Image (tube, rainbow, N blue to C red):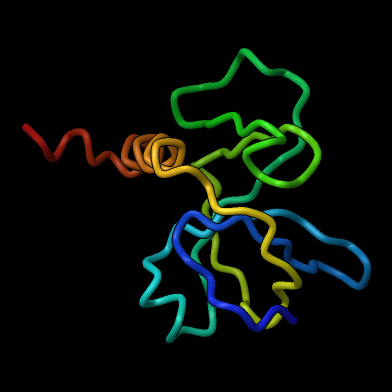
Length: 116
């Protein structure tokens, strides 16, 4: 179990089953990450398709995530994860890149309609 702080925009490894890890990006507010037992995240799916993504997806390069391979965040698949099963923090996303995730999430949630 990883005992350090988890901040918004952190890339973490989560143990789904024994010896099976999956990468996630923390979306939830940092203060809530410190107080709740779960963290709202989006998974990072391995991808080799670098140029194509939907408006609700964000491509993350391997040098941005610390994972050693490129990944794709599909913002329509956000979910809470139990912080007890986080095994490591791999990286902190650059603020501009994290903003791209939030923009894609705004589209998924329909927040662009709220600005009218």
